[in-house]
Amino acid sequence: MNRRETRPVSVGAVVIGGGSPVAVQSMTNTDTRDVEATVAQIARLADAGCEIVRVAIPRRDALAAFGEICSASPLPVVADVHFDHTIAIDAALLGAAKLRINPGNIGDMARVDEVISAAGEAGIPIRIGVNAGSLAPEYLDLDWPLADKLAASAVSFCRHFESRGFTEIVVSAKASSVLATVESYRLLARDIEYPLHIGVTEAGTALSGTVKSSAGLGILLAEGIGDTLRVSLTADPVEEVRVAWELLGALDIRRRGPELISCPTCGRCEVDLIPIAEEVSARLRDRRTPIKVAVMGCVVNGPGEAREADIGVAAGKGVGMIFAKGRVVRKVPESEIVAALMEEIDRLEAMSD
Image 1 (tube, rainbow, N blue to C red):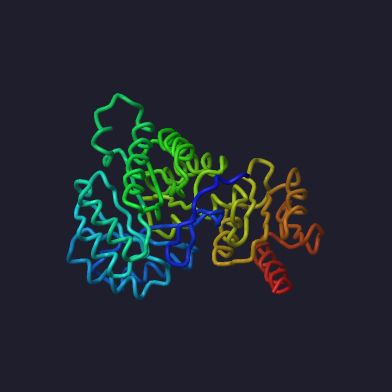
Image 2 (cartoon, one colour):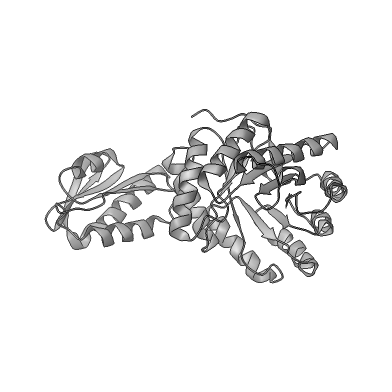
């Protein structure tokens, strides 16, 4: 896969673009004024593999807590600010690793310029985040496709930032439409050299949001477009991180922990495979060794997939043949399949340490 070449931008210790690995982001959904709850959620996100976290500052009374969060966070913290440019300026002084603004709703360009100056003085980047509700005014009423308006608006903001001598920029141009989002990022990839933060905004609940995000982001990532991503879900933010890693792993871009292969089950299956696969998946969730584990339910594809995996099981009538590195190591009854798989996984991980 040929990644699009972009300028590198540092967000704390994490580099976005410039050939760096695609970074995984999420956003807290706690009340920012509650420092303890927000920091606890950030810690959970970090444990799940989040690398950059965004925190909303909806009102000025959240600023003091935001500064405490930045000091306590194990991840670089991005200040998410809308409408009030002075909040963005203060967030830069309080330890934000990056500012995220929509220039189209932050006020006139004089106010945007004040934010640019504050970010420059603090030595932090800005994400120019454009969506259908925050286009540059000159594009609002044009009879153009949404993707064209999103991209053109984002590019116009980039050019303004450049005119101010500021180039520490990350860009996003998102919509709830998968196709409009994909096309807007294709246009941006053609027209600018800044790293792109990709995502499908307001994608939906855990199921629908995962499907929409995977469709849109999968297309872009497969085309080499995207330097950092957030999977937006109406769910626990930790699920956003897990889906992001599953997506990156499915495209062989980055892996964090084991890959589980399991068959969809059919009339040939002679064990109760679904709970077996679900339990194995749950037990693998906190593992970090990048191994391939196969849980297969019948003799058609099972032995072949199990042999190709690092650890696998091919089930027959009430039994499972356990494979390790392509060879059968034992045969166990259905009730012992999960335990036997985990024992072999533990053994393999111990050997790799």
